[in-house]
Figure 1 (cartoon, one colour):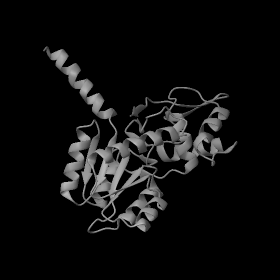
Figure 2 (cartoon, helix red, strand yellow):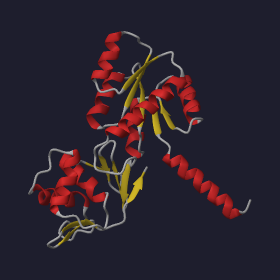
Figure 3 (tube, one colour):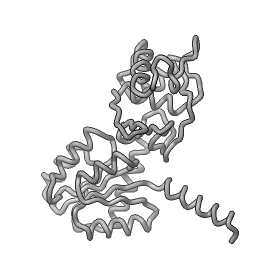
Figure 4 (spheres, helix red, strand yellow):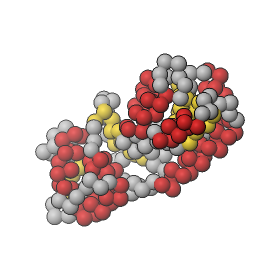
Length: 256
């Protein structure tokens, strides 16, 4: 095989790997981590496996994750508390994993926002089926005015994670966004170099937020500029097209 053909094959494999769903397994049992990682990995699922909440938070800050398999009975932490915090901070689907079979625990987990519940001992095949079901259901529920399957946008060293709603700067610093600011930024990043009128921005951003109102578009733009522009008075990213609207002025990379 020629070098060019080898490179093409490698690039295709890399692209396929990047497109595969990324599942994060949080379980302090190394046997479970290995079992799940091996089985899911052999079925075109990208897997990261960690043993505790701190490792989970570190990975979520650095990578895009599509679904979390979370053990409720971690030795050093309360899995329920981790699930509650996850749901408060993100929309990433959660499948609870536990050795406890009591109905009250299942109900509590679901009330906290878990998307599904699997009791140990379990079949990796059943876990895979549940993961696929949850991801399929989540895709049909997405109402964020963006092409299906996009997990994040990147521009000039910045990354907006659509699952966690986190905006990370080039230096890794997390920038807090209101729901309205997030919604507006999603719309702008989804149409780089395209002029969008205020009415278009309003209609598109309302698809996934109730906090964007008619004349607040200009206010939200000002707030976004203060958070991401080096010089908000001379914006490089969110540019004003006089009499027409706004456009996002630098290249944007999509992460699937």
